[in-house]
Image (tube, rainbow, N blue to C red):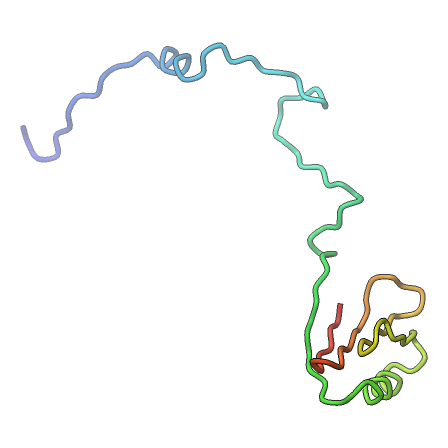
Length: 113
């Protein structure tokens, strides 16, 4: 034997090896009637990656009254500022259900949701 010589490969029948791995495989028709590449359909009711909710957390060193003043100074009359629970104030933009800014006086945190 010389350097680089390989052992002879066994000759196998390719059809036999395929049928041993997948015996009696039956292809079913798809709903679209095609066996082509699989296409992923997005559900319009489910939010896409861009629409996932993200929460940003910040700290505010004042109390609820200072937060209210700061929000009114910054945003004016663009939305409504209401107290959800004692110690929690929430600002929402007029006419929208999604985005909101919450301030929790207990831990001085502002949550932009």
